[in-house]
Image 1 (cartoon, rainbow, N blue to C red):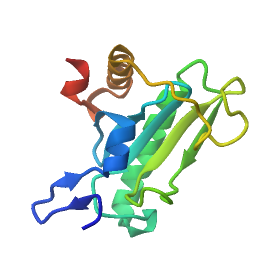
Image 2 (cartoon, one colour):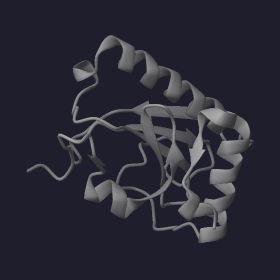
Image 3 (cartoon, helix red, strand yellow):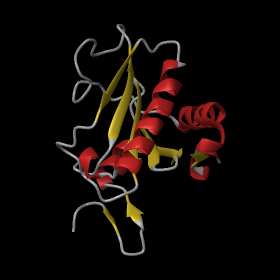
Image 4 (tube, rainbow, N blue to C red):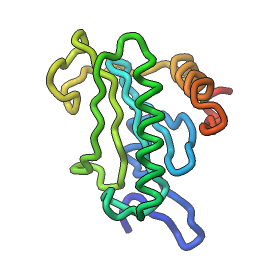
Length: 153
């Protein structure tokens, strides 16, 4: 069995590597919203709740929903004053479960202008900062975003 799956009862399981590297902030219509646990850059990850490994495996309706959710998360990151540029990618070379990275970059970040993968020093978020990020997302996205209650308690 792959490290993630959608069972016959439609129970979605997040890939363990994503679970280990991220904080689960909440849900949009299609995707779980994760925060990469590295405060060096503003790095959110969208994970569609499905068994797809490629964007092209989603039907057209789900592709449209995913794009809309990417745009919502991108808009949120663009509202952060330090974000000058967005990096948006769905690579899947290490984690095959379909997921989309939406990363806010700026010319002062630790890796600029290079990619962030494998180049950031550890800078984990504390629970208060994770809570602030989840609440800020909820405030900006409104009822489209369901906050993970475990993050804000």
